[in-house]
Image (cartoon, rainbow, N blue to C red; front, side, top):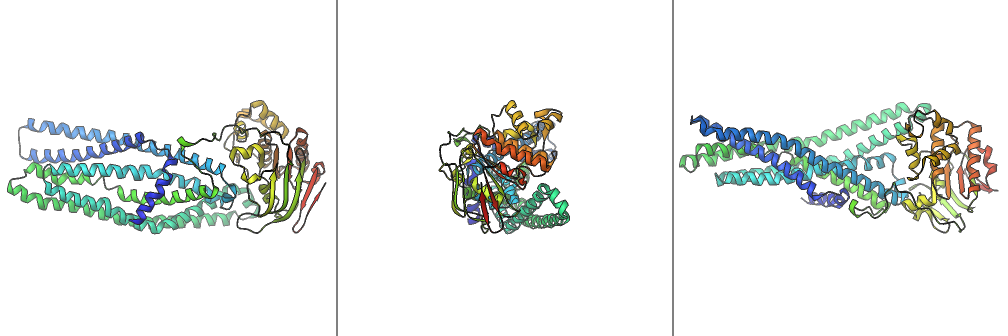
Length: 569
């Protein structure tokens, strides 16, 4: 019981983020109750009709019951369809609201906490975990409410004919509604941890295969990654099979409870029949009606199991939001601007620009890769960061952007620590393009609007021209309105598209990670030179690059080696 209370508490903590409307939930419960009530009524009327017909009365005595059977049969089918629509409408609305709240919370929160997680883990928490929390409505809360309404109604209906039979039915329903679900939940709890870990491993392996397909093929590691995915999938399937065992056992107990209710009702109703306090038709009703009543309790083992699974997902989601310090709010309580709204334009920069003193950079949980760094990037100047792979250039760039907290020392942008900036406030001051930035499956224009929602078509064309993509866009069938994805563009096109996305931002500081990667050397050098020249427009530019042919255009060059760093101007 303590575990059930904890699960209910944890699910209640995230219910406000689902933005559930009481009227819609009540409609789903009412339609679900009507469906099962029609089924119970159908069984009762059919039992009466069968017994009464065996007594060979005039056929007119049976007409009302025959019409009732057809009516309740039609009502059950129609209401079943409507209650499925209503329940899934509530669940899907809740999933949309919750996923939006999680995304907005992560966007406003501290990114260093998320950076310490595997990408597959983040994907699982924002994907499957959100779905699991949403499922608690259609598979947990609504079935439980319907079971309570229909079970009590069935007991009252039987009590009208035989109070003793009603007590038997109440006892057996209590077993089906309380004991059976608790046994299922206890068994499922043992398998939940392994199931979640296996699911995370599957998501991580799948993400690696999709996102790094080309690299894995070139390095010859594709087969080993596929084998790792296969092993993870096997562990996931084994965990699911183990989780199904307690459900099977509880289902068997539910069948026994149903049979016990019929036998128990017969034991108390037959003496009443012999004593003349119960008629033969009433005996048929009190014996057969419980068979339909147990339809209400049949989903409860799965409902409690779903509650436990949803509670575990809710704990992971709330932990993710708490670590990010996002303070995610319910949909109707949100006061922040939508993520599609344009970021505010920052005030003119009069401060010292980007300054780092004694800076040390590291990924969460790892040793610093850059230490004791001192640099100055005044407003309207450029800095090129060069050095071998694996020396911490990307980690440094993420720290300068405020995406990672410094391991030591300080970094400020116009006197403010970038890591303290949140959401639109950060994007208004800093535009960051990383090597693994995402190309969305949408049009070229909408991919650019990911950086600025109010971007016009003319501004998009100018940014694409600056990034060297004007000719490519002209070859597309619908120009800016052509749908693209990460799989339909080449590596060089993807890089320049990400650069164009950074260019459309109004942020005064641009941080670009390997903008010339996958491009011919002369094209990459020209692109880097053009980016460094953006200082003429008053922007500050920091470029990480392997292409050193154009770094002499930068106002300063920071050379990072395995053990030393040497800034030069």
